[in-house]
Length: 301
Ligand SMILES: Nc1ncnc2c1ncn2[C@@H]1O[C@H](COP(=O)(O)OP(=O)(O)OP(=O)(O)O)[C@@H](O)[C@H]1O
Ligand SMILES: [Mg+2]
Image (tube, rainbow, N blue to C red; front, side, top):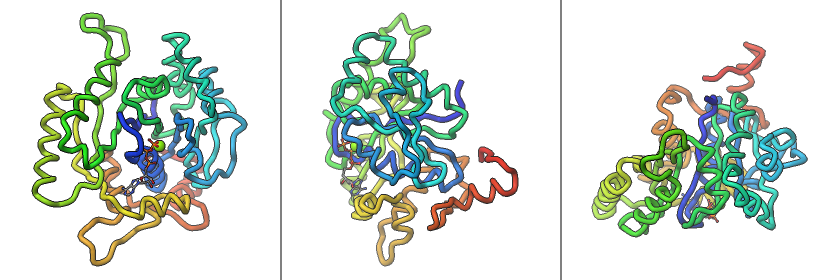
């Protein structure tokens, strides 16, 4: 078994905040002293261009998937300890290659086993799809946990629950022959932009129950809610993690992006609750620097 915990950010729809979530989760985890690899499987390359690169690699996702070998495919972002596999498949030919054999769906998983110990977390961004696009399935097969942003207008939408549960069921092995076949990882839903009115809170509770019942416990909804705020878009424009961009909000009942991202990390990873995010503006991560000085090598916190 590998060391890195692997998240795939997926959704049955596009434009719901997947890339923003993948980039910012990676961004705050490195400021908590973790080593993170971001993987972009979307040919639109939004995650590939989210942060500036300090050392671009000669190759990216195509080579890594087709050879099941990450050598020469890992770029370094300008944020220390945050690496990236760029998407380099603009004509989507990787999808055809994956479709050629059912074993190809395991190649990303295999490639990541080779680098598993170099990272604490691997976060895979995907393209929104209500079918099982080949790359989306590849990402699901390579991950331990699925994270799915849920747009506020879906909170009361039974159809959304049905589509999501149906998508997961399509990937499950048939009943009776499950032994030995990979199963679909559990999914955590993250609600975006819900306001504080009683109606929407009641709808969120209903969503929790419906998802739990229909998915037989495989999908649960996180308590953390990500408010809809301009800071997310503005931070992306400045190519920086949102928790660094908006540390505080004054005279507002809405938590800052910093506090929201930290709450999310604490809910996902309670063992990181005692660490305070740290960063410096010179591009060096203070947590990392301190560890390098005292131990000569990095340790997992
Ligand atoms: N919490 C938020 N509040 C306000 N705007 C947000 C928030 N999160 C993301 N956005 C904005 O919403 C837009 C879509 O986000 P993003 O690109 O992350 O979605 P996506 O699911 O990755 O889309 P696609 O399916 O095209 O890959 C972006 O302009 C982003 O800046
Ligand atoms: Mg995206």
